[in-house]
Image 1 (cartoon, rainbow, N blue to C red):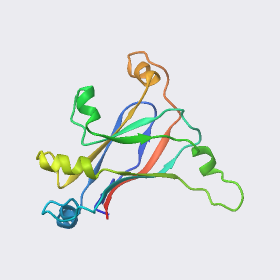
Image 2: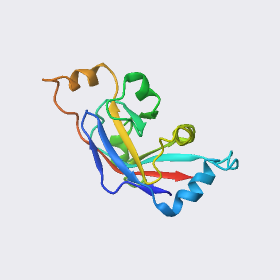
Image 3: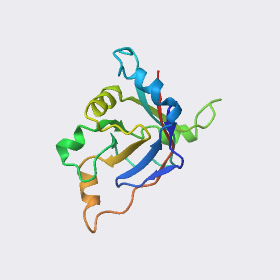
Image 4: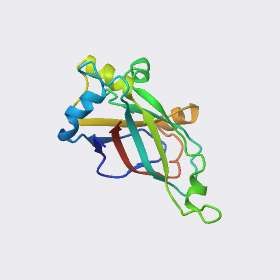
Length: 165
């Protein structure tokens, strides 16, 4: 693990961001994992969204963006999108059947290509990663407008971490 968020993040139907400090002791090994010195082509960097909990599925999918620039255009934002976050099964995770223990959901997204590109562009911060969750779809656009719909049922993300193999 190269770093993790320090506080939970709550999603309620609008864009939210979290900082993930990167431990300076991992900067060298992380660079090697990215193949900065010509090695490490088989190494990978992952963004982990962990301990995702909520009482109700908000029926919304969020785009997950890494180091999204402030005020980025739609096209530029897509260049920072690494995946989507869905909450399918969130109710059952908290109330499983049989002998399974309650747990939060977890999603792991490989972000190696984006991190390599950001490093090549000089846009990679060795000390901090920013992760943004943006609601996707027509309902999200309506809620972002003034006088939009009420908030979604809350979903809490316990931790966001950066790791490499």
